Image 1 (cartoon, rainbow over the protein chains, first blue to last red):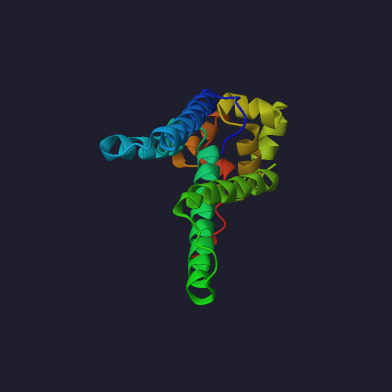
Image 2: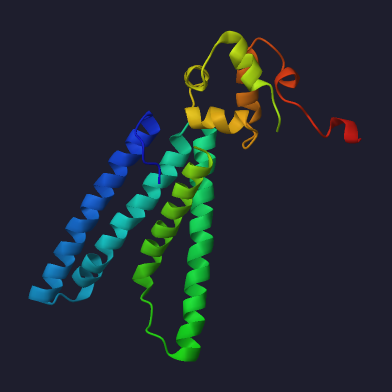
Length: 134
Length: 68
């Protein structure tokens, strides 16, 4: 969520986030390629399936570290508030979709979409807060 | 919370960016505090008081003080 790099905590966050994204792409491409061409099973299949998730967890950890390292308390408050809006929005969207799935037989929403939905809604909240406190 | 930050800044001819640099926070943070949209923590309030060589009460106005 923090996008400018005018302080050390934000710079470290951007570096960690970028590394996590790079690993995510690398792990995902590797996992897809191995599953398509070699049909792995057992512990290797489990490991390959989990690898992209580990990179996503890395992004969450990077944001947690940013909140701990950021010395500007207002920026921390913005980050936390954006995250809360993201969590609230994600819960609202997914529970609504869940009931629609049950009652109207809508297409099943894969759990893998929860994190992107959270990121999108948190990002929108962060952007709106940037406008509010410009 | 209402405050006298703008006046104190003006007396020293500091911009929001100048004050932000002295406080080691962003200009956005100074603006949020100055306009009363964000209440600083006690450590930051003390830092402001030290910077302006005054007390916290002389910077921030406790509007509930007279309400009993």
